Image (tube, rainbow, N blue to C red; front, side, top):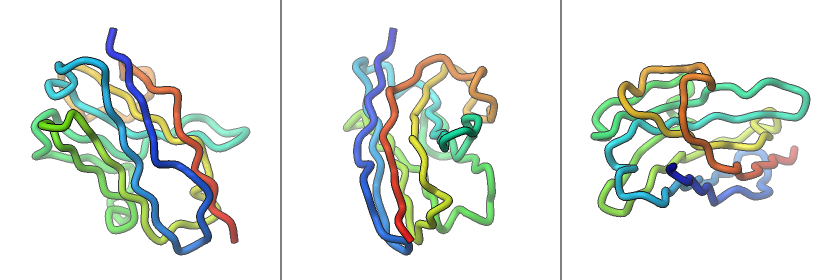
Length: 125
């Protein structure tokens, strides 16, 4: 069982930035694809972005948002990041990281095997 832990959430004004981090309890994390999801109150969990185990390939729910949400990883540090920029109030949600063996190219939450507890991001107007 791989335990994932997110950090970096908080309260930020619209237009601000945050960097979310995800780390894992197992060194094998570096061998897994990692995704970021978010869930706003009353809404379903939705895919944001994912990254291959090598870090060389990424997949975004909305390619036009790549400049605002950027996923990256540092396998030497066992870390995956989600840089959030130009934040909007509608970005307010709990952000989760997830891991899976195999391909990173999955959007459905049910396709991911391991989950963290989430980190709250609140964007004020």
